[in-house]
Image (cartoon, rainbow, N blue to C red; front, side, top):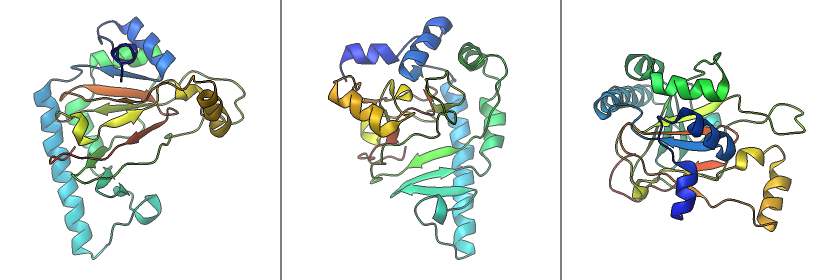
Length: 229
């Protein structure tokens, strides 16, 4: 994307008020260096062991992992070809390596208020050859909402390794958290009036975080590299 667009969604995480303001406007913000890289890589090693363990159990029990929630399990789901979401053991990984981050908690308190909690922790992993996801949101607006409300739930994607653009990072449509209450009508209106913001793919260094409103349109894109993301 243009440098101007990148600046709109990228801020120094020390400037909490500015960071929160940018988030509320765009529905997404990138926080650089949120975790020490070694801490993030330790979390990755434990998460990867959990991933291998789940696959071994499935193989031992003769279970086939199909695509989508309907054909997956509580512990692991295959989202698209080569792309998996795993909950098994990830709350323990979070508690051991990633919890009680003062910088993240300060940011969350500015956006959500003081009374927030973790809903769940999981690992997303895509292998070389993983295909594009469809554009989607992770949850709805408040039932019956006739206007835009502040965020209730955030996604915080923490890079557990360096992620470059070829690896298929998460792609975001900034400001669409305000357009998905009536998605077809509002997004089409934004396209016709040329107000739909350019999509953003965020390459991250190990320990960076991509935080977005779960009502924001996003997707994982194809992993064209030779490395797992």
